[in-house]
Length: 129
Image 1 (tube, rainbow, N blue to C red):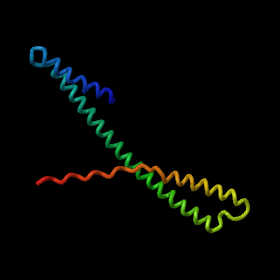
Image 2 (image 1 turned 30 degrees about the vertical axis):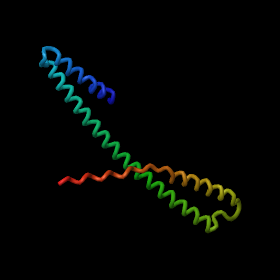
Image 3 (image 1 turned 60 degrees about the vertical axis):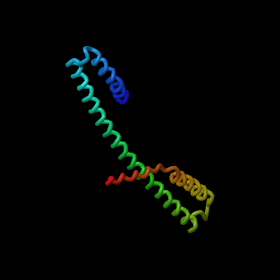
Image 4 (image 1 turned 180 degrees about the vertical axis):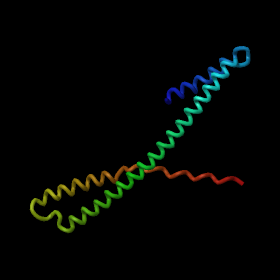
């Protein structure tokens, strides 16, 4: 779809200049074709704007979700530390529980790092008086 829109944008000046060369005025047929092309491009532009808006909304939701997951990982990491302090790793085969906590903490650390953040929205310009 993007390539079609680009092709239409690049072809429009050729169509316009080509019709202007013939007799100095565009023919009625060429004028109708150009109007149809402009109408088609306006429709494609509206569709692309809608697609961009939907993508921006999805990006905002995704970033919010990922931030929540990082906070949950941090909370679970604190819970693991508390469980360890209360004796979770003591007893028979304590090495397996130590290894479990180590792996879990590594995973939780990865969940908390590299979380994408949305750029802060730019402040709207104040009207000039």
